[in-house]
Image (tube, rainbow, N blue to C red; front, side, top):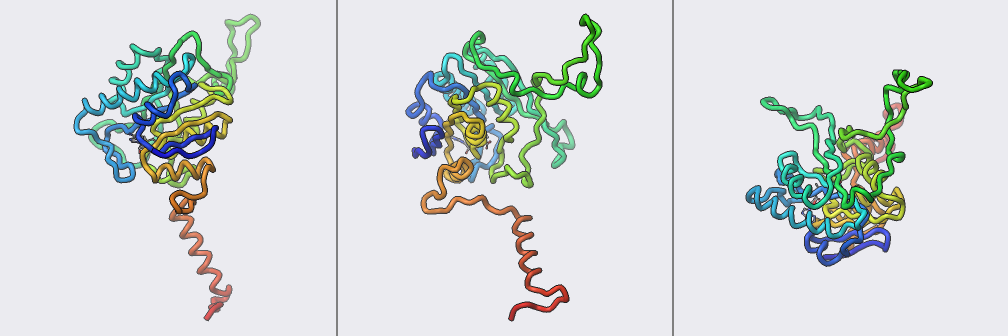
Length: 293
Ligand SMILES: C[S@@+](CC[C@H](N)C(=O)[O-])C[C@H]1O[C@@H](n2cnc3c(N)ncnc32)[C@H](O)[C@@H]1O
Protein backbone atom coordinates (compact mmCIF):
# COMPACT_ATOMS: atom_id res chain seq x y z
CA UNK A 1 0.00 0.00 0.00
CA UNK A 2 1.33 3.43 -0.95
CA UNK A 3 -0.17 6.84 -0.32
CA UNK A 4 0.24 9.96 -2.47
CA UNK A 5 -1.17 13.46 -2.52
CA UNK A 6 -2.16 16.17 -0.12
CA UNK A 7 -4.59 16.63 2.77
CA UNK A 8 -7.19 17.54 0.12
CA UNK A 9 -6.63 14.82 -2.46
CA UNK A 10 -5.27 11.40 -1.53
CA UNK A 11 -4.47 8.60 -3.94
CA UNK A 12 -3.87 5.15 -2.45
CA UNK A 13 -2.23 2.39 -4.45
CA UNK A 14 -3.58 -0.76 -2.85
CA UNK A 15 -6.41 -3.23 -2.41
CA UNK A 16 -9.79 -1.63 -1.69
CA UNK A 17 -10.78 -4.01 1.12
CA UNK A 18 -7.49 -3.66 2.95
CA UNK A 19 -7.30 0.09 2.46
CA UNK A 20 -10.88 0.70 3.55
CA UNK A 21 -10.22 -1.28 6.73
CA UNK A 22 -7.03 0.50 7.73
CA UNK A 23 -6.86 3.90 6.03
CA UNK A 24 -10.36 5.37 6.04
CA UNK A 25 -12.08 6.32 9.30
CA UNK A 26 -15.64 5.17 9.98
CA UNK A 27 -18.36 7.86 9.66
CA UNK A 28 -15.94 10.22 7.85
CA UNK A 29 -17.10 10.31 4.23
CA UNK A 30 -19.83 12.52 2.72
CA UNK A 31 -20.20 10.74 -0.60
CA UNK A 32 -18.98 7.43 -2.02
CA UNK A 33 -18.99 6.54 -5.69
CA UNK A 34 -18.09 2.87 -6.20
CA UNK A 35 -17.58 1.50 -9.69
CA UNK A 36 -16.04 -1.95 -9.07
CA UNK A 37 -14.96 -4.61 -11.54
CA UNK A 38 -18.22 -6.00 -12.98
CA UNK A 39 -17.15 -9.69 -13.18
CA UNK A 40 -17.61 -9.65 -16.95
CA UNK A 41 -14.07 -10.39 -18.09
CA UNK A 42 -12.65 -6.91 -18.79
CA UNK A 43 -8.89 -6.63 -18.87
CA UNK A 44 -7.59 -4.22 -16.24
CA UNK A 45 -3.95 -3.89 -17.24
CA UNK A 46 -3.49 -7.67 -17.41
CA UNK A 47 -5.81 -8.50 -14.49
CA UNK A 48 -8.92 -10.27 -15.69
CA UNK A 49 -12.15 -9.05 -14.15
CA UNK A 50 -13.63 -12.55 -13.73
CA UNK A 51 -14.20 -14.48 -10.51
CA UNK A 52 -14.24 -18.31 -10.46
CA UNK A 53 -18.00 -18.25 -9.84
CA UNK A 54 -20.78 -15.75 -9.30
CA UNK A 55 -21.05 -16.50 -5.58
CA UNK A 56 -17.44 -15.58 -4.89
CA UNK A 57 -17.84 -12.27 -6.76
CA UNK A 58 -20.97 -11.43 -4.80
CA UNK A 59 -19.36 -12.40 -1.47
CA UNK A 60 -16.41 -10.13 -2.25
CA UNK A 61 -18.78 -7.29 -3.11
CA UNK A 62 -20.77 -7.72 0.11
CA UNK A 63 -17.52 -7.22 2.05
CA UNK A 64 -16.60 -3.88 0.50
CA UNK A 65 -20.24 -2.72 0.34
CA UNK A 66 -20.43 -3.21 4.13
CA UNK A 67 -17.16 -1.33 4.63
CA UNK A 68 -18.41 1.55 2.49
CA UNK A 69 -21.52 1.82 4.65
CA UNK A 70 -19.31 2.02 7.76
CA UNK A 71 -17.24 4.81 6.22
CA UNK A 72 -20.24 7.04 5.37
CA UNK A 73 -21.23 9.87 7.68
CA UNK A 74 -24.77 9.59 9.12
CA UNK A 75 -25.98 12.03 6.41
CA UNK A 76 -23.82 10.46 3.67
CA UNK A 77 -24.79 9.24 0.21
CA UNK A 78 -23.66 6.18 -1.70
CA UNK A 79 -23.75 5.65 -5.47
CA UNK A 80 -22.80 2.19 -6.64
CA UNK A 81 -22.54 0.55 -10.03
CA UNK A 82 -22.11 -2.98 -11.34
CA UNK A 83 -23.20 -5.01 -14.35
CA UNK A 84 -26.92 -5.48 -15.02
CA UNK A 85 -26.69 -9.17 -14.06
CA UNK A 86 -25.22 -8.48 -10.60
CA UNK A 87 -27.15 -5.34 -9.66
CA UNK A 88 -30.11 -7.35 -8.27
CA UNK A 89 -27.75 -8.88 -5.65
CA UNK A 90 -26.51 -5.40 -4.68
CA UNK A 91 -30.05 -4.11 -4.48
CA UNK A 92 -31.27 -6.91 -2.20
CA UNK A 93 -28.21 -6.56 0.03
CA UNK A 94 -28.31 -2.77 0.32
CA UNK A 95 -32.02 -2.26 0.76
CA UNK A 96 -31.82 -3.79 4.24
CA UNK A 97 -28.97 -1.52 5.29
CA UNK A 98 -29.56 1.82 3.55
CA UNK A 99 -32.45 3.61 1.88
CA UNK A 100 -32.29 3.23 -1.89
CA UNK A 101 -33.71 6.49 -3.22
CA UNK A 102 -33.17 5.98 -6.95
CA UNK A 103 -32.43 3.14 -9.31
CA UNK A 104 -30.68 5.01 -12.10
CA UNK A 105 -30.14 3.85 -15.66
CA UNK A 106 -27.11 5.36 -17.37
CA UNK A 107 -28.05 5.06 -21.01
CA UNK A 108 -25.74 5.58 -23.98
CA UNK A 109 -25.88 5.14 -27.69
CA UNK A 110 -23.75 2.28 -28.91
CA UNK A 111 -23.21 2.42 -32.62
CA UNK A 112 -20.09 0.23 -32.54
CA UNK A 113 -20.29 -3.57 -32.24
CA UNK A 114 -23.94 -4.58 -32.08
CA UNK A 115 -25.54 -7.78 -30.77
CA UNK A 116 -27.16 -9.72 -33.62
CA UNK A 117 -29.16 -12.41 -31.83
CA UNK A 118 -30.33 -10.62 -28.70
CA UNK A 119 -30.89 -7.06 -27.49
CA UNK A 120 -27.49 -5.44 -27.00
CA UNK A 121 -26.59 -3.74 -23.75
CA UNK A 122 -27.09 0.02 -23.91
CA UNK A 123 -27.13 0.93 -20.24
CA UNK A 124 -25.47 0.48 -16.88
CA UNK A 125 -27.39 0.57 -13.60
CA UNK A 126 -26.53 2.85 -10.68
CA UNK A 127 -28.05 2.71 -7.18
CA UNK A 128 -28.35 5.95 -5.26
CA UNK A 129 -28.63 5.21 -1.51
CA UNK A 130 -28.54 7.27 1.67
CA UNK A 131 -28.02 6.39 5.32
CA UNK A 132 -30.80 8.64 6.57
CA UNK A 133 -33.72 9.50 4.22
CA UNK A 134 -34.55 12.48 6.45
CA UNK A 135 -31.06 13.95 6.43
CA UNK A 136 -28.96 13.94 3.27
CA UNK A 137 -27.57 16.46 0.77
CA UNK A 138 -29.42 16.87 -2.52
CA UNK A 139 -28.61 20.08 -4.40
CA UNK A 140 -31.32 19.82 -7.02
CA UNK A 141 -30.73 23.37 -8.29
CA UNK A 142 -27.16 22.43 -9.25
CA UNK A 143 -28.18 19.74 -11.72
CA UNK A 144 -31.20 21.15 -13.54
CA UNK A 145 -31.73 20.06 -17.14
CA UNK A 146 -33.88 21.43 -19.92
CA UNK A 147 -37.63 20.71 -19.63
CA UNK A 148 -38.77 20.60 -23.25
CA UNK A 149 -42.45 21.21 -22.44
CA UNK A 150 -41.61 24.70 -21.23
CA UNK A 151 -38.41 25.49 -23.09
CA UNK A 152 -39.22 24.26 -26.62
CA UNK A 153 -42.94 23.61 -26.85
CA UNK A 154 -43.82 26.68 -24.74
CA UNK A 155 -46.93 24.92 -23.42
CA UNK A 156 -49.16 26.75 -20.98
CA UNK A 157 -50.40 25.12 -17.77
CA UNK A 158 -54.07 26.14 -17.70
CA UNK A 159 -54.60 24.40 -14.36
CA UNK A 160 -52.78 27.33 -12.74
CA UNK A 161 -54.65 30.57 -12.01
CA UNK A 162 -53.56 32.67 -13.83
CA UNK A 163 -52.26 30.17 -16.46
CA UNK A 164 -48.46 29.94 -16.61
CA UNK A 165 -45.84 28.71 -19.04
CA UNK A 166 -44.37 25.38 -17.90
CA UNK A 167 -40.89 25.50 -16.34
CA UNK A 168 -38.03 25.46 -18.80
CA UNK A 169 -35.82 23.43 -16.41
CA UNK A 170 -36.35 20.33 -14.29
CA UNK A 171 -34.55 17.92 -11.98
CA UNK A 172 -33.36 14.95 -14.08
CA UNK A 173 -35.29 11.71 -13.80
CA UNK A 174 -33.65 8.33 -13.28
CA UNK A 175 -32.68 7.72 -16.92
CA UNK A 176 -29.45 9.58 -17.65
CA UNK A 177 -28.04 9.90 -21.12
CA UNK A 178 -24.32 10.67 -21.29
CA UNK A 179 -22.01 9.49 -24.06
CA UNK A 180 -19.40 6.90 -23.10
CA UNK A 181 -15.79 8.05 -23.12
CA UNK A 182 -14.43 7.55 -26.64
CA UNK A 183 -10.86 7.51 -27.90
CA UNK A 184 -11.18 10.88 -29.63
CA UNK A 185 -12.57 12.67 -26.59
CA UNK A 186 -10.23 15.03 -24.74
CA UNK A 187 -10.87 13.25 -21.42
CA UNK A 188 -10.01 9.77 -22.77
CA UNK A 189 -7.42 7.74 -20.84
CA UNK A 190 -6.12 4.26 -21.54
CA UNK A 191 -8.59 2.26 -19.40
CA UNK A 192 -11.35 -0.11 -20.54
CA UNK A 193 -14.18 1.26 -18.37
CA UNK A 194 -13.47 4.94 -17.78
CA UNK A 195 -16.58 6.82 -16.64
CA UNK A 196 -17.43 10.19 -18.18
CA UNK A 197 -16.77 13.46 -16.37
CA UNK A 198 -20.38 14.51 -17.07
CA UNK A 199 -21.74 11.52 -15.10
CA UNK A 200 -19.59 12.28 -12.05
CA UNK A 201 -20.36 15.99 -12.25
CA UNK A 202 -24.07 15.30 -11.83
CA UNK A 203 -23.51 12.95 -8.89
CA UNK A 204 -21.01 15.14 -7.06
CA UNK A 205 -22.90 18.40 -7.60
CA UNK A 206 -26.17 16.85 -6.42
CA UNK A 207 -24.95 14.82 -3.47
CA UNK A 208 -22.19 16.88 -1.88
CA UNK A 209 -21.34 20.44 -0.92
CA UNK A 210 -18.08 22.30 -1.42
CA UNK A 211 -15.44 21.03 1.02
CA UNK A 212 -17.08 17.58 1.31
CA UNK A 213 -14.94 14.42 1.25
CA UNK A 214 -15.61 12.01 -1.59
CA UNK A 215 -14.34 8.45 -1.67
CA UNK A 216 -13.93 6.17 -4.68
CA UNK A 217 -12.63 2.69 -3.73
CA UNK A 218 -12.11 1.55 -7.37
CA UNK A 219 -10.76 4.69 -8.97
CA UNK A 220 -9.51 3.49 -12.37
CA UNK A 221 -8.62 6.72 -14.15
CA UNK A 222 -9.62 8.76 -11.08
CA UNK A 223 -12.55 10.49 -12.75
CA UNK A 224 -14.22 10.88 -9.33
CA UNK A 225 -11.18 12.55 -7.75
CA UNK A 226 -10.63 14.70 -10.85
CA UNK A 227 -14.20 16.01 -10.79
CA UNK A 228 -14.16 16.39 -7.00
CA UNK A 229 -11.10 18.62 -7.34
CA UNK A 230 -12.65 20.71 -10.12
CA UNK A 231 -15.72 21.26 -7.91
CA UNK A 232 -13.75 22.18 -4.75
CA UNK A 233 -14.43 18.94 -2.88
CA UNK A 234 -11.82 16.72 -1.20
CA UNK A 235 -11.14 13.23 -2.50
CA UNK A 236 -9.77 9.82 -1.53
CA UNK A 237 -9.18 7.45 -4.43
CA UNK A 238 -8.07 3.81 -4.12
CA UNK A 239 -6.75 1.74 -7.03
CA UNK A 240 -4.91 -1.59 -7.26
CA UNK A 241 -2.88 -0.96 -10.43
CA UNK A 242 0.26 1.20 -10.78
CA UNK A 243 -0.67 2.03 -14.36
CA UNK A 244 -3.95 3.63 -13.30
CA UNK A 245 -2.47 5.36 -10.26
CA UNK A 246 -0.06 7.05 -12.66
CA UNK A 247 -3.06 8.39 -14.59
CA UNK A 248 -4.60 9.66 -11.35
CA UNK A 249 -1.44 11.41 -10.20
CA UNK A 250 -1.14 13.15 -13.55
CA UNK A 251 -4.85 14.00 -13.90
CA UNK A 252 -4.94 15.57 -10.45
CA UNK A 253 -1.60 17.32 -10.86
CA UNK A 254 -0.26 15.56 -7.73
CA UNK A 255 3.04 14.36 -9.22
CA UNK A 256 5.12 14.79 -12.34
CA UNK A 257 6.90 11.47 -11.98
CA UNK A 258 6.30 7.97 -10.59
CA UNK A 259 9.15 5.54 -9.77
CA UNK A 260 11.48 7.61 -11.96
CA UNK A 261 9.05 7.73 -14.90
CA UNK A 262 7.87 11.14 -16.14
CA UNK A 263 4.08 11.30 -16.12
CA UNK A 264 2.82 12.53 -19.46
CA UNK A 265 -0.42 11.89 -21.29
CA UNK A 266 0.45 9.60 -24.22
CA UNK A 267 -0.24 11.06 -27.64
CA UNK A 268 -3.14 9.48 -29.55
CA UNK A 269 -2.40 7.85 -32.90
CA UNK A 270 -4.06 10.64 -34.87
CA UNK A 271 -1.97 13.21 -32.96
CA UNK A 272 1.27 11.34 -33.74
CA UNK A 273 0.23 11.00 -37.39
CA UNK A 274 -0.44 14.74 -37.56
CA UNK A 275 2.97 15.55 -36.09
CA UNK A 276 4.69 13.12 -38.48
CA UNK A 277 2.81 14.63 -41.42
CA UNK A 278 3.75 18.19 -40.42
CA UNK A 279 7.43 17.15 -40.03
CA UNK A 280 7.55 15.55 -43.43
CA UNK A 281 5.90 18.64 -44.94
CA UNK A 282 8.53 20.97 -43.55
CA UNK A 283 11.26 18.91 -45.23
CA UNK A 284 10.07 20.12 -48.63
CA UNK A 285 9.71 23.54 -50.23
CA UNK A 286 6.26 24.19 -51.76
CA UNK A 287 7.79 23.34 -55.18
CA UNK A 288 8.90 19.95 -53.82
CA UNK A 289 12.60 20.85 -53.36
CA UNK A 290 14.13 18.81 -50.50
CA UNK A 291 15.32 21.18 -47.73
CA UNK A 292 17.99 19.03 -46.08
CA UNK A 293 20.84 16.84 -47.14
C1 LIG B 1 -14.77 -0.24 -13.40
S1 LIG B 1 -13.15 0.28 -13.09
C2 LIG B 1 -13.31 1.90 -12.45
C3 LIG B 1 -13.30 2.97 -13.52
C4 LIG B 1 -13.36 4.37 -12.95
N1 LIG B 1 -14.67 4.67 -12.39
C5 LIG B 1 -13.01 5.42 -14.00
O1 LIG B 1 -13.78 6.37 -14.22
O2 LIG B 1 -11.95 5.29 -14.62
C6 LIG B 1 -12.68 -0.67 -11.73
C7 LIG B 1 -11.26 -0.45 -11.25
O3 LIG B 1 -11.07 -1.17 -10.03
C8 LIG B 1 -9.72 -1.60 -9.97
N2 LIG B 1 -9.66 -2.71 -9.00
C9 LIG B 1 -9.93 -4.03 -9.20
N3 LIG B 1 -9.81 -4.73 -8.05
C10 LIG B 1 -9.47 -3.83 -7.10
C11 LIG B 1 -9.20 -3.93 -5.70
N4 LIG B 1 -9.29 -5.10 -5.06
N5 LIG B 1 -8.87 -2.81 -5.04
C12 LIG B 1 -8.78 -1.60 -5.67
N6 LIG B 1 -9.02 -1.45 -6.99
C13 LIG B 1 -9.37 -2.54 -7.70
C14 LIG B 1 -9.39 -2.00 -11.40
O4 LIG B 1 -7.99 -1.97 -11.61
C15 LIG B 1 -10.18 -0.94 -12.20
O5 LIG B 1 -9.33 0.14 -12.55
